[in-house]
Each structure stands twice: as structure tokens, then as C-alpha cells.
Length: 222
Image (cartoon, rainbow, N blue to C red; front, side):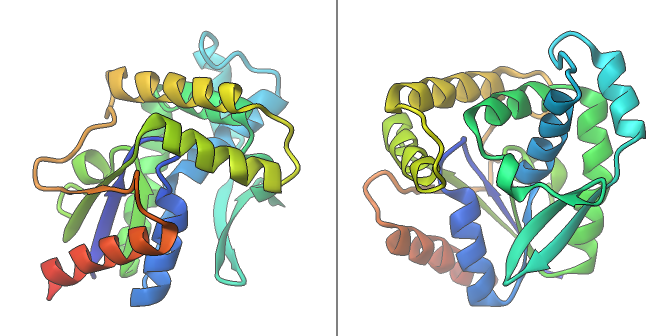
């Protein structure tokens, strides 16, 4: 199996680019961020204080069934039998996802599922620690990045298109919060793998970004 690890900060366009790259190479796309977001969404809906009540989070996991479905080529997160894709991209869930991602037993809970998919399929998997922790032996490792302002502008456009009312300053603040949280957490922090290729998309269009990532993959796998 060919595994591609695509890491980078929040809002770098990892999922959008990974989906396009997966279509180009006919790989399976695995969105690990959506898995964390789904758990964070359930915790918020359950009224759990993620930052302090680890016992409640652990109890929630024991009662959670997380699965992946595909619809029109898009990954759908199925949480306890319900498709939650429409609910997991808000700033509130983004912040909660960053909080829940620092909990060791949550990461272990998801790690088994992520690796199982990687063993079964040629895939591109995106997240914060794919190349350093989840798939340290991935065939191709890419660190996708862009300035915080560029990432916030892109995320704002996505949210507005979905009808979410939020300001640029709110999105930028959430982006900066996640950058700090993800980079400073003790367990599997956001970090470029030593053998990863850097892809900076600050000044690139989406098509140019996709082409850049595809070119890197072609050069590595031949």
C-alpha cells in the first residue's frame, strides 16, 4: 500500500487539497481532523467540559461508535449512526477539537482506526501528527502550511458559504488559538517530520496548491 501523510496547521487547506490529490491518484482520503471534530461535537452536545472532565470524556468514548461512509466521493463522518458532517466545522467545534486532541486516551482510541485504514488502502491521510506519529513510515510526507491570515481568510469564506455568521477577527483568533494549542501539546504536537517536504500555499491558488502536492508525490514514488 502507498500511504501519503499530509500534515499542517488548521486552515491550511489540508482536507480540500487531500481530496483533490486522492482523486488524482485514485487513493482513499482519510480525514483524521473530522474524527476529532466528531468526538468534540458529541462532547459539546453532551455538555461535557472537555478541558477538565476527562472522566466524562472517557465514559463518552465507551459509548461512541465512529465510522466513515462515502457519498459522491466525499468522506462522511458517521457518529453513533448519524451523519454529522454538517455540524463539525464551526469555530466552537474547532476549538473543542483542539482541546480534545490533547487527551492521550482519545488519541489512542482513534489511532487504531486510522492505522487500520492505512493498512487496507492506498491512502492520503491528513492531520497534525500523521508523519510524526500516526504513520511514521509513510511513503510520502508533506507539511502543508500558509500564513495565519491567509488561512483565516480561506476558512471565513468556507463558513460564509455554509451560512455561518462569523467575523474575520473571530476566525483569525480561533486559528491562532489552535496553532498555539496544537504546537504546544505534550502528546503528538503539530510538528514537521524531519523527512517531510514543505508545501507553502500562502501565495498559491487552490489548483496551484494541488499541483504542488501532486508533483511532490510523483517525485517521491516515481
